[in-house]
Image 1 (cartoon, rainbow, N blue to C red):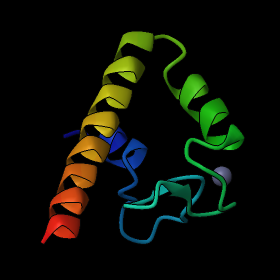
Image 2 (tube, protein in one colour):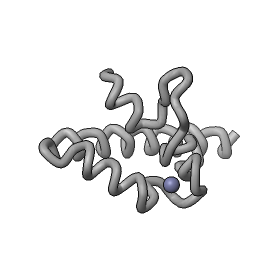
Image 3 (cartoon, rainbow, N blue to C red):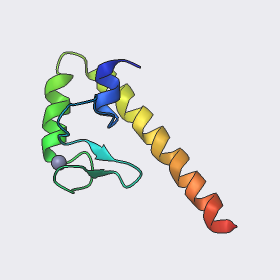
Image 4 (cartoon, rainbow, N blue to C red):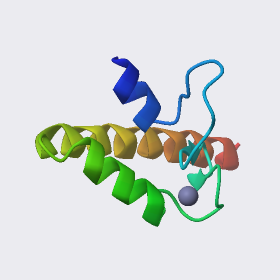
Length: 80
Ligand SMILES: [Zn+2]
């Protein structure tokens, strides 16, 4: 995973200010508390990936898969 990918998925680098990144597993913005991606995060993602929308699409698929896995894990915990 590249530094950029990690940042998009909410893994800020050590010492980096936390901006509009997702707080997992709640998927709320760490800064403004809105559902992620919040408006500022959408603008940042579109700006960062303006020349490579396919990578943005793939990043979002990865985030969706992670969310689905977390929901499955939560559902299994609830059934016990
Ligand atoms: Zn935000």
